[in-house]
Image 1 (cartoon, rainbow, N blue to C red):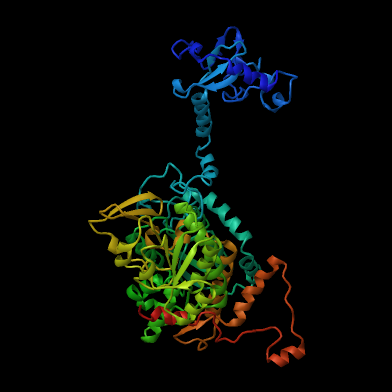
Image 2: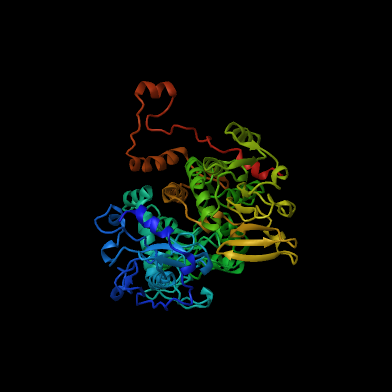
Length: 614
C-alpha cells in the first residue's frame, strides 16, 4: 500500500468515533494492547524490556514489498504489521494514537517515561568511584570532583577535614608533607607522565646534566603553582642534585593528585586546592622553618616566599646564594628592595627574559583565557564587548584570542608604547570609565593594584563577567565587595554571583585570582619553556663564582635564552640556518650566538608601567 493511499484512508476517519482515553484499555509497560485483533506498531512483547525493543516513537513502515519506506525503519523486522499510522489528538493532552487500516483508533503505548528511566538507570551505573574519573571530564565544571588540572580529582570518601589536622605518610613511612590525600598519588603520577611528553627541553636537560649534578648540594625552597608541569621541573631539579621543599603560590591552582604524587616520591610538599589565607602562609612557613634544613636557593612566583623569609627569617639570607623570580609582581618587589638597598642576594628576573615574555606570557595566555572563561561561564564570545586592562604580552595574547572569536575588544593602557601597539593591532584604546557600563567581560592583565575598583564594579551591567589574568589578586578590589549590602552566591567552583540590592549581579571568577591556573589548564609545551629557563637560572646563580653577581636584579644571559629555545626546536622538526664566516664578521656576531645583546628585552617598559601610578 502506498503512502498516498494510507493518507487517503486517514482522511475518512470520523473524529467523533474516536474513543476517549477513559474508554481505552489500560496499557501495561510489558504487554502490547490490541485493537480489533490488529497489532500495534511496536516490538515483540517478550522483548519489551530489552534494548532491542522498537522505539515507541518509531514511524511505522509501509507494507513489505511496497516501496522503500520499510527499508528505512531500523527495527522493521520486529514489527509484526506495519498497518498503523500515528496521529495526535489535541483533546487528549497531546497523547498519541494509532489509526488502524479499518479506521479504528487506539492509544499508543506510553513508553517515553519508561525508556527514559532505563536510560537514567544506565547512566547512573557509570559514575562509580572508578568511572567518575573518566566521566567527570565531560560534565560541568560545577562538580567539585572534576578530574582536571584546574579542579583536582577528589574521591567521594574525602571529608572536609583540613589537611593540617591529618596525619598522613607515604608508602615509605615519610610524613614530611601536608596535602589533601596521599591516596591520589597514582592519578597524579599519570598526569606527570603526560606532562613529561610535552616538556622536551626539561627532559633533555635532565638527561644531559644528570651525570654532572650541577645542583649537587643545592637546597631549593620553592613557591609556585603546583601542577603536573611544576612536578616535572621539581623532579628535574632533584635529578640534577638538588633537595626541594615546595609550597603553592596560589590557593586555587594546586592539583591535589599531583601534590600527592610528589609527596609519594619523597618531596616535601605543603599545598592543597582551596587553602585559606592562613593555610597559605602556614604552608610557606612549613617549607622554610624546618629543623636541620636551611635553603640556599629560592624559586619564587609572586614574591610571597621571598617576602616571608625577609620578614620572618632574615638571617637565612646569609646562606642563600640567589633568588629566581618569574612573575611581574615578584620582579617589581625585587626592584623595590634593590632600589631601597635592602636586597641581600643576587636575583634573576625570569619574567622579563625573552623566553618567558614571548612564549609563556603571550602564547600561553592566548590559549588559556578562552579555556578559563568557557569552563566557568559557558559564555559565547562572538559579539561580546570585552575590555582588557593592560596590553603587555599577557594582554596581547588575550586580545588576539578574543578578537579571533569575534569579540569586540577594547584596551586600557598607561604606557604609550603598548598603547600604540594596541591601536596598530586594531583595538580601540579607551579609559575604563568610558566603557564600563556597556562591556560584557572585564579582564585585568596589568600586575598592578586597584585596576577595577568598587566605583567601576557598581556601574557594571547586569551579568558582567569579571576576571583577572595578571599574577596578583590585587587588580580587582574584591575586598570592597565583602559588605553587608551585597550578597555572595556560589554558582559553581570558582564562580560567584555578587548581587546588589536592586538585583543586579556580576559574575566574579576565582575571587579575582589568576583565571587560567585557577579555573582551567595551561599549555604544557609553553610551560616547558619557562620551567627550563627557571632551571638554568638556578644553575647559573648556584654555580656562579663569587663576585659575578652582586646584590641586584639581573636578566638571564641571552645565550641561555637562546639555548632554551634551541632545545624546543626538534619538536617541530625545525632546522636553523647557520651564518657563514663572512656573514658573522659583517654582523659582528659569533656564529653560535648570542644573536641579541644582553640589554635586549621584549618588555623593558613593563617595569615602568607597573611603577607608574594610575
